[in-house]
Length: 238
Ligand SMILES: Cc1cc2nc3c(=O)[nH]c(=O)nc-3n(C[C@H](O)[C@H](O)[C@H](O)COP(=O)(O)O)c2cc1C
Image (cartoon, rainbow, N blue to C red; front, side):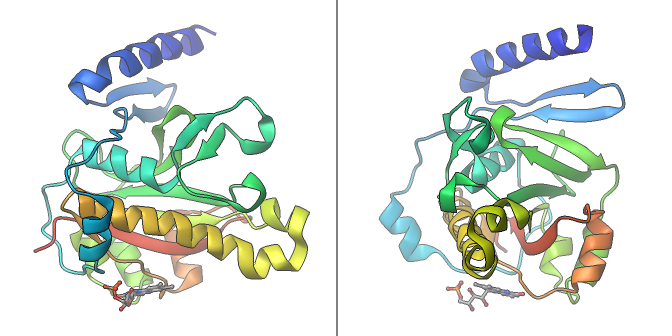
């Protein structure tokens, strides 16, 4: 209870202050390391049309230059809550990307290597609280690169957005049509947001679908009901 209350106070403090200061708040709940991310900005420096026009898959990155503000903005664009709801079916609210029946089958992780202030590791993105929770306390970029057929951009990029899906959330309602179509349609919507948001922040990314499923599952320590789908390394293009 005490932890919960101090967590709520922290949360209130962060959402009130982060709009001005744009900083994350680091907290621990027991053994768990959590970062409450800065509030995302809904104003950018470049128009949507310019962003679409300049978007490319970028595969060569500097090893630094990415901040927690970038991390916050990219995760929010991927699957952030844009209309909160208490309806348990939508698990926190409607998101930045459309989803068949608002079932939200995707799980999103941040594979962090070099972001000042954020300890390296694998984090789960929890959209309703706009926070990341650490699941693996080490930099796994090298191992993930090997699992991704040695696509070196994964190792070079300061962090990657990692996607998996819980298919049953969709197949429970839509059966085979959900499995064969809707999950990957959902993925495409979200991943395109990441492409465009990265571009608008003068960062770059590349959707990586070519990897060894078993190796990736092992590196990411995915639960049995999750299927790995995309790795999107994020960095300053060289
Ligand atoms: C489903 C999918 C899987 C992809 N997998 C990879 C990949 O494993 N490695 C890679 O370098 N690019 C990958 N790409 C990126 C494409 O190669 C890229 O989008 C394409 O060459 C067009 O270039 P553009 O994105 O710059 O327009 C993938 C793209 C999609 C949509």
